[in-house]
Amino acid sequence: MVHKSILRTSLLLSLSFGLVALLPGCDKDSDSSNSDGGTLTTQQEQNNNSGGSSNTEGGNAGGGSNTEGGNTGGGSNTEGANTGGGSNTEGGSEGGGSTTTEKPPQTAAALKIDWVKVKATDQFLMGSPDGVGDGDEHPQHKVKLSGFWMSATEVTNAQYNQFLESLPDGDPHKQSGSNYSGLDNEFKGADQPAVCVSYDDALAFCKWVGHGVTLPTEAQWEYACRAGTTTNYSFGDALTAEQANIEGSTWQENGKEVKEQTRAVRQYAKNAFGLYDMHGNVFEWCLDWYADDYYQECKGAGTEDKTVSDPKGFASGSGRVIRGGGWDGGAGLSRSADRANSYPEDTYVDVGFRVVAPVAP
Image (tube, rainbow, N blue to C red; front, side, top):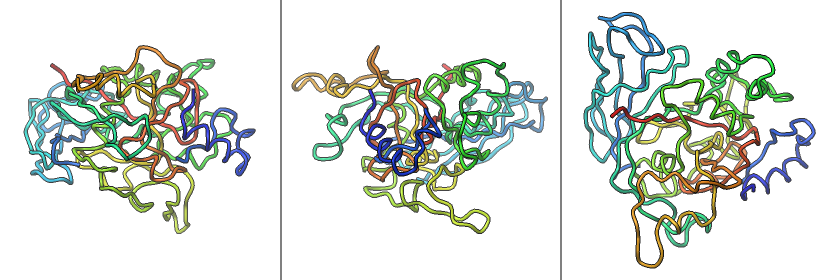
């Protein structure tokens, strides 16, 4: 089952761009902050600390990593190097700052994954209020989430290519990402998000990275995207082509105007949790199977109004959830609550992913 955005626009764009023959499984498609959820953000510096030995798998054998915390929503920023302990972070959103000595996942230094700590929440409202959005975004329901780490950006080609290089010839995942047959070079920049990556490819990357890294659940993704807000977007109720890479966005590269493609990550303002490109650029795979009526199941019948804890979606289905909108879709598809889905084996030039990891107990 392919949800609204993928099916409708792939047909339109295949006619206008003639890309179905060029990219048989990787088509241009899709048309489609802060007060109640404080966070801690860290950007892991994958180098040696002043008192320790070299990094192993991204961690320091003799000393914790340097981290920097804070976000645009408020809270104090601190930066400190450790000489013999775990990483220090301090920061917060409008919901309040706090301090942690927890280390981010000790992923390989060469990957340069910047990890953001998303604090646990006793409750946030998932979905859209009545009168806003599509039917599958209703009803709004209460969700409780444990804390987790999330990559500050979508997985880039530079990161995904390291995975591709590790695979033997003949591996089914080898021909994904920048290796995808017929993929234009305009999508292969090192700092652009990896595309033409199926759900199955994305999970294989996560397994290769290790350290408990996986794809976000739909609930984790929406909570992180909202960054404490209840508006349509983490920046308010409207989103312009200057705030995110969506349909109509243009920018300059080497003195030339660029449009209608993915853009290097971190080119737009981060949200209050310290996450970039949660709106636009590429849709992002989530772990959950998609279902139109899933939110009603979460809320409960009648006036039951349940609170669900760390929901992971239904146990089976045909399509996996994708979130966040893409470079070729309208602003409406990039809303915090908008839902779409695609077959897990499918690949597109406007679908990528970011990763999460559990917080150590």
